[in-house]
Length: 243
Image (cartoon, rainbow, N blue to C red; front, side, top):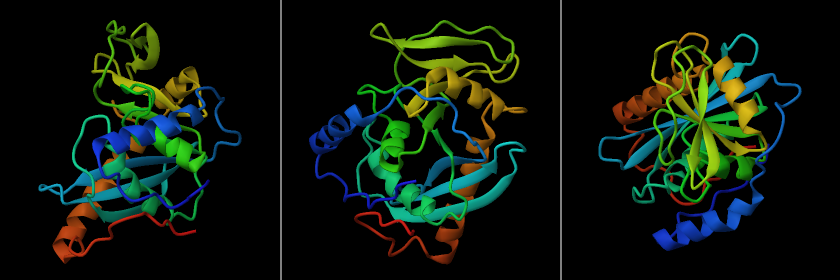
């Protein structure tokens, strides 16, 4: 896993879009499941109410048992405004800091968010995948863009998420008669493979265990940081992961 410093936040929206455009050609949209697949990391963030700071969390799960074997978190100031389609610039610094604290090196990253299912085909899962060079995909709760036919009601039923005639993701029913989730390739993994893994990661609930556990961890980290005052004087500027 590569962990290079993340540059300072772009000065403007145009600069951020230009950075996505620069990195997008590096995305690899095909790939089998990693072999061996031992550690799967879930990544999520939680924001303070005033959005002045963000807590990034990474939970590493045993690929066979889905048991959490390690959790790492990091708090960061938010250095970029809320602009749909550019959330990665708010969230990646904290997530890279958390990834840099891990002892277990993940074979696969699963983001709470989008990969190719993004207006510029470069969502958070693509961005993180390119930066770390780890197979990555996103699982989102709603569709950001695209149209789809409602999948069947059985667990495992799915349909394509389509935008401009291009399949950009998969609408997946992880539990019977429960709202589907939206799976999209991030980097170095094919959509069919990502869809199968997303289903495997959700044996009991609508959301995969990677999302459930990292969501809980990010909320705990944010609450602890706010309670102890750690959310003041937070790190700003480029992310410098440990290791």
